Image 1 (cartoon, helix red, strand yellow):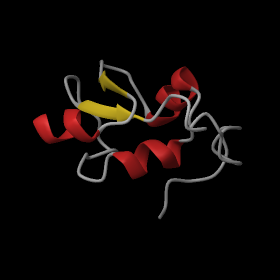
Image 2 (cartoon, rainbow, N blue to C red; image 1 turned 90 degrees about the horizontal axis):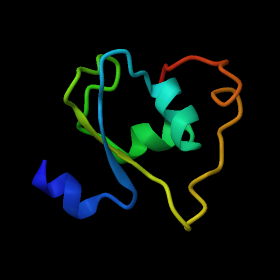
Image 3 (spheres, rainbow, N blue to C red; image 1 turned 60 degrees about the vertical axis):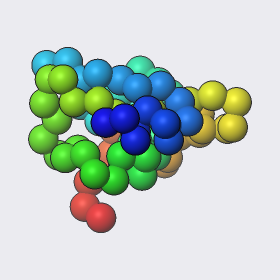
Image 4 (cartoon, helix red, strand yellow; image 1 turned 180 degrees about the horizontal axis):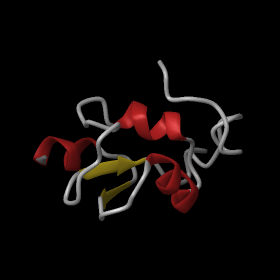
Length: 78
């Protein structure tokens, strides 16, 4: 995970039991797709307590929400 710390332009979130991508997107005000994009090697469909995820937050405009996911709609198919 050292590479992740060096490359993450945001915060490192340590997953707790019960965390979901949608819940994290709501907590940090970023789109689910942005979290997925910033964590290409994480198993985002099966989060486990202790996993470390890069959450893109900050001045760079990463607070935009993605239509559908922000409203809790849509699916996770890519």
